[in-house]
Length: 267
Figure 1 (cartoon, rainbow, N blue to C red):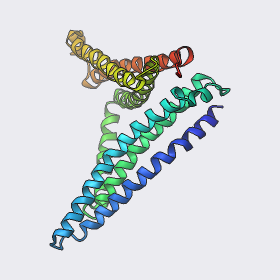
Figure 2 (tube, rainbow, N blue to C red):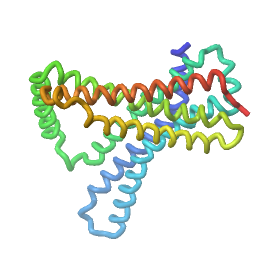
Figure 3 (cartoon, rainbow, N blue to C red):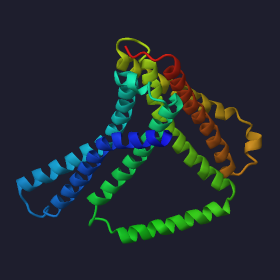
Figure 4 (cartoon, helix red, strand yellow):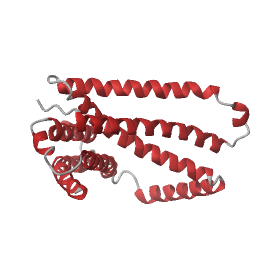
């Protein structure tokens, strides 16, 4: 059943994202074409060039704003509006509903980032020689791999921790949105307002605990740390933040699951 939910959620959200992606690419291409006529000294040409560039910047930011809005809108609409009556009568578990929406939201967040980067490449096409750029990147990558091998296995553990931290942070961000709406729907009125308050409240808690962890670092055993390699120290610090992010992510997921299972208010 999870596979069917994923397929349905993908199709339902694609109709929002694909037009935005298409517009971003079109605006990047149009802005790039306008630059081809930059040598023509005319007011009209400058107006068109600036307008298209501003439109691109607006759409570039809009991709990430749209990602947030669609993720939030789909969850709230499916779960805590009149559609919720139908959603909660489906022969699926709350876990599968939550998992399907989280997975698709995570995928769209990654895709939005990739699309934004590709649009920049379209915009600078011709101004930047991608051949030498990719060659330099290849050289940098080879140097990085040699450095990683020199400090193995700790360097690879650090890289793994960074990757896991990024993934957990994105999943935690999605689940924080869901948890905020799950809290917001507890009241009969002003659900969205309470959800916004919950979202910022969760953010304050995250900042407080993250700052507390940073302030605790000076109290570590520096006698032992001074005998460690810098990579090992980085590994330990990253692990601490990784565990903290894991706690946040798990807390948001469990809170959302409990409230959806026991405290749903569709009034």
